[in-house]
Image (tube, rainbow, N blue to C red):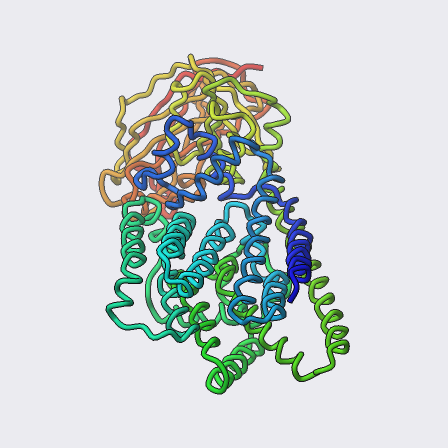
Length: 599
């Protein structure tokens, strides 16, 4: 095969990959993207090494190479989402070309290399791994495949230079994503199964002990990372019979990776049907028969896929992006079938014509699927940005050390509003939500945002000089183990039609056996109730029966004041609790005053 054809093939694969996934650029940033962006934006050059490499400060996985990537990209390109997407697509292009080179090198057939990369590039099952820039799989896969490439060279030459480069690639893969811990096993299987080299136990120990030690050391570092424990406790990660069911679902996607799949994973658990399950069984039988009769390479291909699926099987959900690396095995299997078809058809010109038509149709169909997926994801991401867009229109800038405090936000603050704010306004603007202490006086300027009936943000400028008193003095006991430990008031002077807002901080002094409802009444000096608010904590999202699991419960309440409310001063807010099932009130009541209603 001439170098000219090899380069033409590489350029064609690169162009196909760029064109196919370029529609994902319109998606912009989404959820986890903002977490990484905010961390990058709030990291200074002076403490970058600590923020990137110290596992004890990592709240969003310990992936130093990804942290370096976002830090540098943010320093040079700011919050330009287009650049981030193009870089992620470029990582994917590199992986397509690496698969092209690896499959060609191992099979010694250009057609198998090209077909493997082409099929991989035209799979539409993993768009979330590319269109979602916070996903690190494309970056990690580069070093995973490079390690395999250099290991092949090492096995040919037995020189320490390629051993060292392979280990370096392994370390970089680990620093990109935890699932790269499977690489030492894959390297061992390359030597033992794929190349069928004789391997004694002492030789294997000398050759692979450094890789195993690196994997163990990195696992221990992961254990020190707070995010590891948080992720496991929130999402779950445990061995059990459900792993077999999850594996079957991945196999369905593995053996039929075409169609319209989400650019944002939806954690769907059941992705198969009776027909697809039957096809999986047929495919496995055919592969089993082919392996027994023809090639040990299929055994390695299957092991490669399984090894890179095993770490995600304990998760109780499906995410298509986890197939980004293991589904390369399916691409190679299809390439082997493609080469077999060439041998059966025989006539070179005839095969070339049929193959060109089929591959063109496949590429076109995949492009349409990716475009549909990207459009859907772009609209989803746009809707999450709508509340913040309203704020951007009203405030081109904010003063330094400004707090934006959101009550019951539509868009999450972590992985959303907080990152959007940092990207738009810089590190001097902070975002909190109603699950956190506001601490308004810690900031030069503060705004509170609540959402009206149309779910658009309404803004309240915090009066830093607002003064109130509470009776009885804090902490206030209400009975049933409910205690008010603190509160904050953004404004005490309120216009007619605007609400009175309170931030209340509660705790449970003991186990609370039922769910209580809180009331807050705005009362005039003559005892008349002007406005009322009745709700379980955080609109039912923090029931009192669950308080024992948390050190405190922050709850922000919005008491609507009618446009015809009586004008006057020295109004008060009375706060108490009752059992909604029996309407029986608890004994304690707190009174916060004064409040003034103005025209």
